[in-house]
Each structure stands twice: as structure tokens, then as C-alpha cells.
Length: 264
Image 1: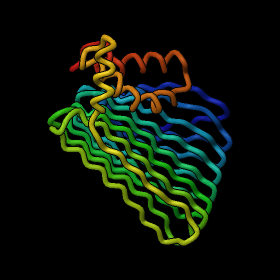
Image 2 (image 1 turned 180 degrees about the horizontal axis):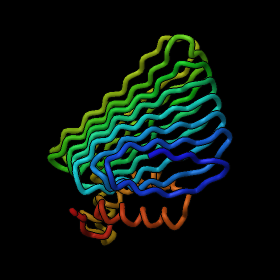
Image 3 (image 1 turned 90 degrees about the vertical axis):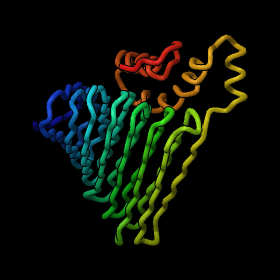
């Protein structure tokens, strides 16, 4: 399915089938698209035309194992933010590739996942033009006996001078019984650039858990409160306030903030 967004837009889409989707954002258009994904296959192309500014929020609500491929293209002067939220107890594989097709293009990829089942993320932003910008920001909460892999690649080609590539990944593991792996990669073939990567991986702080439990929370609720902080930066990117509150409540329930985890 192909769809073109023009001028100013605030749209919502539902993906329930396995067909490929191509969303194009016309030159100088601005807006956001919230996409509810309930299919087991996500095949999507996103084209940000020149000087457009767009946020695409992908809310994964599939109840079956998910395979996804997302291609992001940004033309000259375009800004596109791709946001993925996955708190479902399903195995999922994500392949996200962004590429600049003009100078001063800007691509951001943000993700948050509750790994209650195995998750694998592979993402890359490719710079071929000068003065381009790429950022990857990932948050993961990993439950016991689950494998979560994150590979983030910033790739600056020769000629893409004065480009910027940054990435950050934060992983919270519920115990030592996990298989969390983060692989940050930078390929740089140009001298005049700025690039960085940062990664943290660890378990909940024992002192924080103790403090929260002395204030009346049980352990599961305390863990949920610590976990929700990994999702709020992503949830806050939903522009519709009512929809944002609805998603926030659902995530709070999933992480156990209300005293029980939903395992549907």
C-alpha cells in the first residue's frame, strides 16, 4: 500500500496484514503518523522528501512472532524520526536501515523494548552526503532467560564531511539469567565528522529497590517503577496527548507497575 502525506498532518494507521507499505512525506510537509502494528510481518518504506519534518511512531501490538524490515530515506534538508515501541511477549526481529539522499538530511531511530521473549535489533544509518545527521537511541528491559541483541551501525562514507553520527543504548536486566548483547559499530571513511557511541548494561540497583519497598511497593511493582523510566523517553514522542496517555498506561501494566505483569 502506498500513501502520500502533504502539508500538515496528524494521522493514525492500522497494519493488520502482510502487504508492504510505502509512506511518502511530501516536500515541506510536517506532521506525525502513529502506526499500530498487529501483523506478524512489517515491511515498510519511509521516504522523507526535501525539507519535510516527520515523526513515525510504530507501536507493536502483534500477538505472533514478528519479522520486520524498515527502510528510511531522507532527501535534502529532511528530518525524519522513526520510533519503535515493543512491549509484547513475542519473539521479534528488526532490521532498520536509514540512508541520506541529500545534504543536511537528518535521520533519527529511537526504540524501546521489553524483552519478555527473544528480540533482535539490527539498525544502520548510512551517510553518503555532507552535513548529514544520524542518531540511534535504544532502551531495553530484559527479563530472565531471554536473549536480546542490539547491533547499531553508524556508517559515514568518504565525501560525507561535516556529518554527525551518534548512538546510545541502555539495557536493564532483571537478573544475571539473561543473554543481553549490545554491539555498537562505527564505520568512518571521512576525517571531518563527529561520531560517538555509548552503552550501559546492568541490573536494578539494590539500594533503590530496598528504598521503594520500604515505601510500600512490593518487589514487582518496584521493578516496574524502575523499568518504566526506560520507556518514557520513547512514549513522550507521541504527539497526541490522549493516545500518549493510553500507551503509557499499557506499558506500565506490561512492566508490572500495578503489581502484576500481563503475559498475554
